[in-house]
Image (cartoon, rainbow, N blue to C red; front, side, top):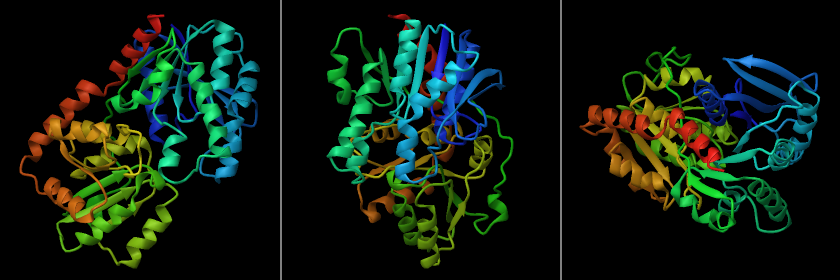
Length: 396
């Protein structure tokens, strides 16, 4: 199939979404599909730029910035995404390509207009990879109230659903949210697990053994540190376990809460926490090879559910997991049934501390590592994701 893969992030960006899209595009190519990635860029001096990145054709089109800026500017940039990307595409060598399928990734919710235009132009089928149920999660977190702004976002959310032939959610708990959408003829709703291609250890700029936490059992977090993660609980956990000189916490990434979290740790004079700036995704295997437990954090106020990409990264690395997640999240059952760590639901620091100690002091660490890698191979490969997406598209 001739596939347009549309997203708002792609390498060299270092987000988990960008890495997933890279792995997916390369696997589409490996399986014999002709794939082109369409992605916005705020750094272009021209309306478009076409490049070959690791064997995949990538069309970058000029757009307003949407990353690491204030909410108002970000919303404006995202609202303009479809219009600006369509304009850049129409000026590019891919303007008249006839697509068999359009596959796009959410977040963001603002690509529906672009996908609709591509479908009409080519008579293409479409597959929405839905990883983020927005604006619902923002309401759950208290970041947004139901009102005019909420209705504005809901309009774009419904628009992207309306142009999808297939929607792949990342957890069976999300199926109910789209049950009404799926009742319309010609639509298909399914669970599409997150994925990650195998990655080799090419080293890491962070050397745990050369820092103050050398020799400790390291609990590591690599990813965004913002409101949605509820990372204050990690600082509280580190404070509670300050007496355990054999346990340390390494927190790597960026996000709206990083500066505040660092200040919190400094205020409490925590010597068992080390913060590091975001690193290149290629360095993540090298980081995880130095640590002992992978940390997953989801604020318990969330009502929608997902299996974060970092969980899959930890599984691939053979790391047991300590997860603090929201009630009803499928991840709790998965971690328990597969015996790959400890999952805690709630806000009790005592109980979270007990879960952390249990996974750090577990006697079956080697067995957990074997189970984790087996789970990664079985459920979370980019090969399986591409096969599932292609099969769903061919069914129409």
